[in-house]
Amino acid sequence: MKYVVTGGAGFIGSHITKKLVERGDVVTVIDNMNTGKEKNLESVIDKISFVKGDVLDTELLESITKDVDGVFHQAALASVQDSFDEPDEYHNVNVNGTENILKLSKKYGFKVVYASSSSVYGNPIRIPIKESDEKNPINPYAETKLKKEGLAIEYSKMGVSVIGLRYFNVFGKGQSKEYAGVLKLFLERIRDKLPPKINGDGMQFRDFVHVNDVVNANLMSMDSDITHEFFNVGTNTTITIIDLAKTIIGYSGLNIEPIFGPALDGDVHQTKANIDLIKKKIGWEPSIMLVDWIKNIVSSKKFNEI
Ligand SMILES: NC(=O)c1ccc[n+]([C@@H]2O[C@H](COP(=O)([O-])OP(=O)(O)OC[C@H]3O[C@@H](n4cnc5c(N)ncnc54)[C@H](O)[C@@H]3O)[C@@H](O)[C@H]2O)c1
Image (cartoon, rainbow, N blue to C red; front, side):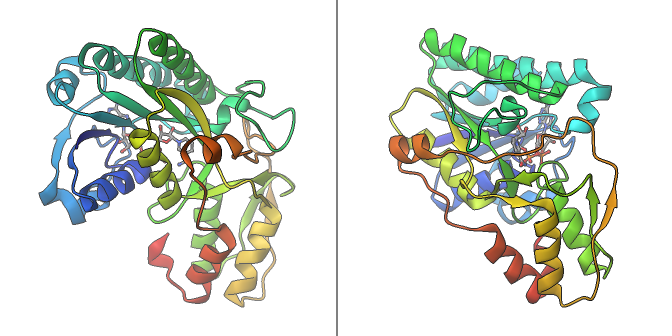
């Protein structure tokens, strides 16, 4: 099959690209290299078409998508903190960029699986969070993700096949600073034998999902005969930030304690996914658990794998 991965040089997009290549699909990546990295695609660069370009360039997008079976749309501006300073730019790339793809999908009939985010829920009214629960974004980034969902609903009514995956905190090799940033930062501090630095009281908790599982959720959604849905992509397990710090310290064998700083603006207090819907509809479930991954990285000092 033939696919386009937008944002394919980024953290999640590059893992999707590599998996598609591994299973023999034909892949074109479009990425403007805003946060994308060449090294993310190094191992497959001879086996894909790489287009350095922008999802806001509609002519370019049309030229690479008109004969594909599907688009995995990962390209976005993804920093909660930056979205407060540049809300218009965030709207432009995230919302208009997504609409460009949906318009082309309507014209050419390909399926779209795209990256939504658990941030659409804001501070949840109940835990674990179900897909149908209230959406209450608390920062401009999350607002763009909710607007994209509005577009997905609108275009699905016009016959477009579009599935939105609400990723929780994605971790794994090459993880971005956002979302699982706390994990990356803690591990880098431990590598340098420094105490992890916690923003706020550390009692906030998160649902961390491994990037390989996120890749599978993308592929299984694309391969399924479901035409329109939003799925939570998490693990239905959580860890508090203070326990995360203590777990990492524990496996490191260092005699240190975490240190504390002020809480961040726009940071949600707790996330935990209810994943019954995605299990039931496409048979997806997570296979890699955070603590096992941390143990492997920290106790064997594989800090080049973060
Ligand atoms: N990492 C997570 O935990 C997480 C959680 C929820 C949602 N998401 C979403 O998943 C997607 C991928 O996130 P990621 O963590 O891989 O981030 P990332 O920053 O590593 O990847 C985003 C990619 O998009 C590219 N890009 C940005 N603007 C572009 C544009 N205008 N045209 C073309 N390419 C552009 C960047 O260069 C980058 O390669 C994003 O949509 C993000 O909002 C990520």
